Length: 574
Image (cartoon, rainbow, N blue to C red):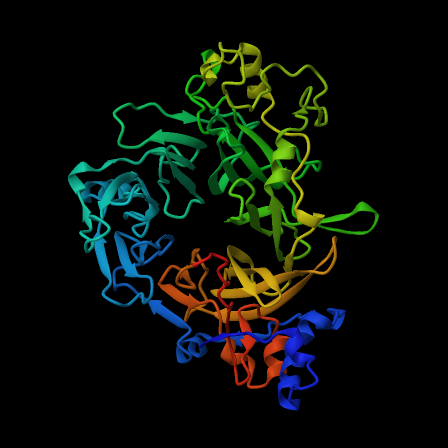
């Protein structure tokens, strides 16, 4: 149910307003006129729904697939066609965004029999020796690029969708498949991230059967040349047992030569202050036009830099409670595509407590750290310190562009000094701290961990909100928002806890459709379509609706329903 909320504050204060109308207005304005008290902090969600509750109120629409399908861990939203592509074991489903169960289609794509047999002979479990679809990307308006594990022999291909104006043709030509090595994991459960940019695939994945060589690769797709770029072999300064979480192309300036790929990961920390093994989260970046270097960095990144991502709770006397292990990231686009907000889900690796936190980062802060000092270590028995020596020109990590000397046209033109420096100093000295230096949402000792996130921008009566939808390892989705109280603090508002799967199973992936106002949640056994709001469940009184503080909802005079902003009046002259 939707409602257009047109009550104005001056209407509420009119001396001619009826008592009933005034009461209704005052309850609406209570959110905006009264300060948020500490007592309003909720340790429990405002609403809790079981799986059966969601089915009964038509808020949840599960898609089970078929008897042989499982492992729904890759999802691609196609807003233009109104379709949802879902990668599973040996199958790709093409579903309707409005109703997942309306005329579903599927592409059967098993691994070759000889590959399955070889996989089993090497000692892998029979359940692992299949083609798990791990990658789905839009290639153009008529094709989707996809890769699967191929029974530990990765393989990639194209789904031909046909012209956008016609019905889907869904052709996957098994005869024109190409090797998926350096593009897709061998292992069906290895953490993995990728981005398809300008017909090149950037992928953080393993390059071998045993998973010992995990690196950041860029590979051409459907090109005849076999040139690829990667991080250094066996150099823990660059990457140390990394787990890739997400990557995005982001323009730093209006100059296309400066375009970069930003990569988010976690890894074993060489720069940890303690002697115990520690996991740190990182943001890394490379220039999109990096073509590798000469001599020591042939076919290797020459612009790779990384910095630590901090998500911690400040305590007394400088003590910090850290959430070190990045689990998922979400790029929240603002009005300026060069200044997105990055939301990250982190978990604690502490043996003292179990917890999860959400931190938000500004691109300005991330860029500032990459423009700052490099870190340095004289010898294995020394501490990491700020590099104080001479930095070669052009600054390592800078993308070649027309502003440089005409002798530097590509990264192959970098001097030996630049190449040597970045090879031995890929890490920044300063860390990236979140907005307001603290998490915007924390859950500690609650019996679950948050592992997935999507964020929706909502226009409410009193402004815009970022609403967090958080998937957990027990099959629930948490709906929450962070309300800024002043320049330093924010209040957490836990709105809903939803059991979206019949069984307690981890959420593997989440995607959001802003157009459909739906979230799509994948698990081992099914995909669930979930509505963003359940306003009618907040109660039948105005005060209950308003005090729920759900930005999707408003009181229309009769019921609590979804708030729809009134259309803006056009100033154009007719």
